[in-house]
Image (cartoon, rainbow, N blue to C red; front, side):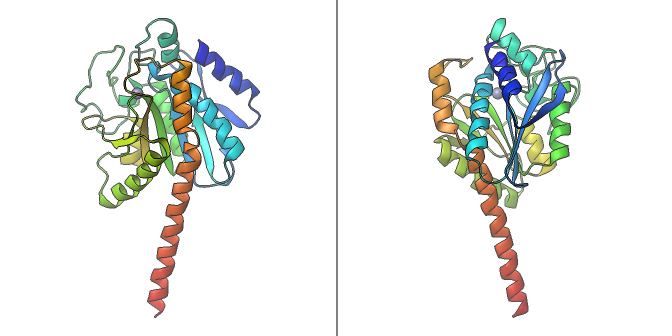
Length: 274
Ligand SMILES: [Zn+2]
């Protein structure tokens, strides 16, 4: 209960915009924190969709504080824990548990080539069960509705582990270039390498890329050699050190990108005049 307790306490004390955007299978509230410096760019930072990866919730609380204090532009909506039931199971009962309380792996429950992943299974359990249909789970429906209603410019999903960043999901050429450029920024920021999760699908990132056509990133935080679940103070310190400020970095990258589009448009219209 340590991480969930820390989240409840943080939520209570937080003075800014915050709320509950849905409920888990066992009716636990799903919290969001909404920090707006300017209207856009707008990003969603999502954590602990996989239960045993709850160290990302602890990181998220620190990242919220960082963006609140140091952010100058943009708006960030943080979801520190999308899977509180699973986190509770992982913290108290089964340390390697990944799914939600229904035994559905939430990060394969989105309609993005759903059910075609190489590790997908059709039976409920601790991991890889895709659910009876896409969006079968209250947690995935809740983040779907939130995402569609606020229309983010990009999303980050935090997972553990391996110090890798994934950005691709069958995008066409132009979007692939755009998204790789941003992935490189995040890679420089964290020191993590850019990788690809070939053969995996149905994730939140995949859905953001395929359905919403926005840049979306999975960040596998934490050293590969550390065993699941990462929970030591040392592991958290390492993740915070490498990832702190990631929200500001992504928003900065999106802002530069927008400016370039405007500049190019201006150049083109100049040419048109000549
Ligand atoms: Zn994960």
